[in-house]
Length: 323
Image 1 (cartoon, rainbow, N blue to C red):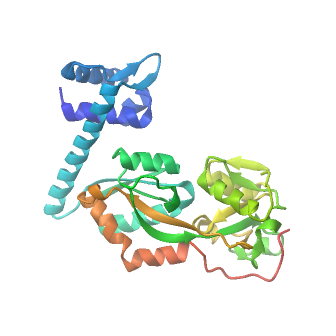
Image 2: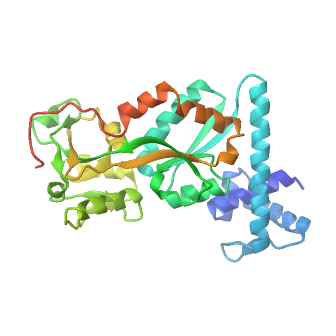
Image 3: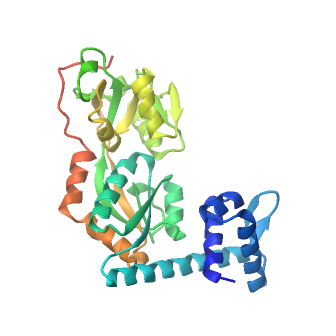
């Protein structure tokens, strides 16, 4: 039995929660995965997987085997990265995640990292804050970009990157709709933004909770016209669905060159939420993570944060109000 391969299959089952999807992720058949896990159980003499018609989780013994397996895989990855760096080019995978509204910035960061280290393969995932923290704790993630105030475990380190600011985004009426880029308008109070038909992220998203708290602070309870857990769908609803939305600067920056849109910075109150990189300090010995931590402090990345996140510098169009 190949112990490392079996641990890799076990980790895939943990990540995907489904036998067929875990096998597909490992590029093997489902019977091959099942046989490897049974061989692992025979090797240790304990049941590891709770089986039924579908995957039902791990036994207590299985949880111990899984944690040891994740540590083994992490040790192997660290060794491979060190050897590749010594050979002249850092190689390996860096498992990264972001809350959906920060994904545009994580993509920019990963692109810069790849430019410096072409042998690295960033693997990017959009995840909720609880899933990010769990993934970092369980060593299934190396680095994440998320809300600082959502961290509950003292073992998770946070490096602040930018303060998220919020905007009302809406399709622009003529003549702005024929412009070649997004138009910016004067600041708009949150209470006035509530009068628009809003497409918002679903209530399980932390961004949605920030939006609701902001409206509640001015005595407004918002009933959205549409909800989605996809930032892309949200932007499409604004562009094609005659709706408005509340978006942070990192999302707004992705449509900065899109014609037919207008954005109002939201005020009264001005709301800010800290976004930072999250990781386990014990994992800094991983060369790929060390390279990412070094990039965080570099001027090129700090400039990306200033240009594409936080309080954006937008060219203000002629004074108008939300239609």
